[in-house]
Image (cartoon, rainbow, N blue to C red; front, top):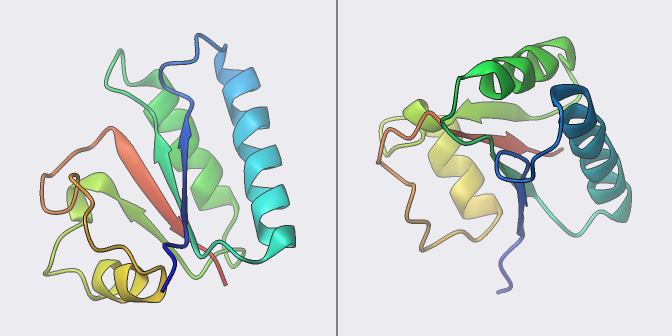
Length: 110
């Protein structure tokens, strides 16, 4: 089975917040349209937290667009959506699983 996750690193791209959100929107739209990817891992980085907060706000504004949004600090074996997404997207070896990493966010696509 093929891994069905895409990683987008907007935290280390030196983009302004509005540019990073535009890149995220474009990536999510294109990935959803193509249909072969089941999850998107967004790396926001730690930094000042402004980008992380902007991405989380953007995700909240997309209510109903995704099957789930899983914050890095909730990405562990105790989160049913995280476990189900990992199974659906065939994610077996993700170093961030269970690491309480608040600098990442997962989007589980419909």
